[in-house]
Length: 448
Image (cartoon, rainbow, N blue to C red; front, side):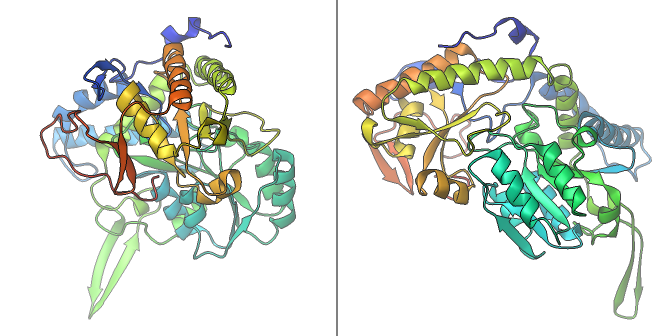
């Protein structure tokens, strides 16, 4: 296997729960291996500590006269500045706090003054946001270069090109600078879904030349319910309020039976109601903690581990890793695989269930809210995704590879059954309700 760079690991920010032990169906307890950071990353310890520090001051923002309200107002606006700096916002860009990437793209969709062009390999958040705007989907090529050619051929007449920064299925990145250049040459703007890119690589609006960036805090080690849309002000100032309500207006009047409204400019225009102060503060704290490592230490750590993972999987008969391009310029630490006919053709959900119940390893299975891309790569079959992050170690990678090899060679050691669309151990002696709040079924849905 590829040697792992161990020296930089000590400089990486610590995460909460890195030493969590979980039960197995055979009665043992083992350290949990979380390989599902692409879905939701654990909070950084610095983020959790900051939220605890803020809680005693928690109060309303912007309109309160009390000391704590003034402190919280300053905290929210400071968070806005911090996130903007981290993402390379230009002086006239605006930072709007949202719930997540999906919410941010839905906001932008209301602001776009014309049709939108996307690729077929996008996450559903990008594919579905623009349906009412005159949306056109372009089939990506087998290479990044061919995909650029396809975008260049079809970009004319569109107001916006919306693309993913890094695939949540394959980890492959797109050449964003080149996409921005070809879009701008045709008079279009560019929006980047950076939900998967920002936790792994520097995202800089000014350097990349892109116009808008959307991301989620829960993937950036700040799972407190905040996301962000950052980008050019003019469209956002002209758009209908994303969430109409208090804080989004200068004045409201009623004349007869008609309500009149004088809206504020962005960002307040789109942040009606009481904002998620703790989410914004957590997102800013994550940006501060990641700033020293995002350019060198973190990418080196993840590239080494991802290479180790791919090398290990390549030696297991019947395991196939998924790729969309033959020439991706870079890839983040996401590896998706199928256990094919040579390995017994095991369903992805069964593999994921066995990894959890028998080995203490958490992964994601399904089609990852990227159904068109999975239709291309697997014929629509579910797959298994392992996504690495700050807390991932060489031991974690080796445990995963060994577990996959065992499952491929011998099959699951426990019995499993399909229940509500998911594979589950039968029986399952593990305590699935450690908080004593009631054990509830996991409904199958788009998240798979």
